[in-house]
Length: 346
Image (tube, rainbow, N blue to C red; front, side, top):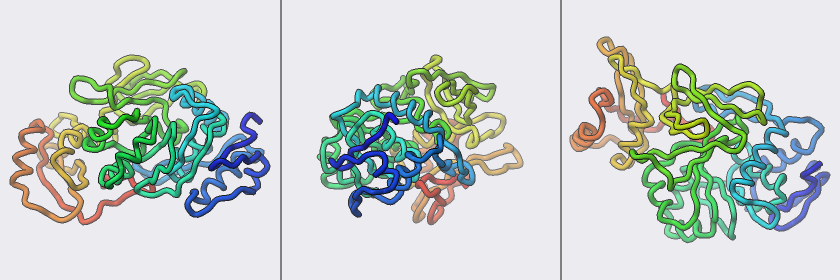
């Protein structure tokens, strides 16, 4: 087996030790999901069990090909120029595909794996060539007094699991590390495209570029189609509406499931949220509700305590188009979230 050993926190463990969980973890080193994943990785099956995120429905169990995971890891390692002598920090749970793939990248590339108990504010104790985080962790680091100095110990930051708010994106651009936003899903065993925060189009949207051996198309809904033979011989049809730049690059606009058809005009909530994110400090999202006149009307939902809306209405009217303008603003004490922290648009 190519990945017959793994160095964890500086200690070398071989396949039989990893399979039988004969290695040392402390409460500061991670969680049991790591040990369970490694036991599954080194068993006789050619797949491991994963689960979809649940952001657009009930989480589903899915069989993930170990070979596809290896191929994805090789492409990511090559992109970030990582191999023996480099280091990865795992500060996400191995229950999810993002955490699993950090482990596989270490296994495939003989990369030193360091563990940190998953938390909202990673400590980042050490210097790392690659760290993967979700937007909530970036937010917490930005708010912490030493978040900048912690991130200065990271060469490449990979962000996924949800849209990165504008404030966090602008903050990361001021730091010396290289930040990339991932596009992918459990079914594609992590990302199939990456976008640098430093590359945007004329309206500020980031541009995603395919990993090697990946290409893209669109269906009649303008949704992305993924061609990646290392994953499957069949195209993967997504529900992500994109602006296709070329066969290997695109701009993400939003989920087809979330598109609002109001008066015959389709508007994308995610694009509207991007425009308003600098002006609303609380979590918020747009959604559709039935309307006798327009078919669907735009509704803005804001999490937390209500506040006066006069200034917000004025801001919204100066930024959004007439069709994007919400017909109602509703406050919700707490949004419903998936296990991985994504807000459910209900």
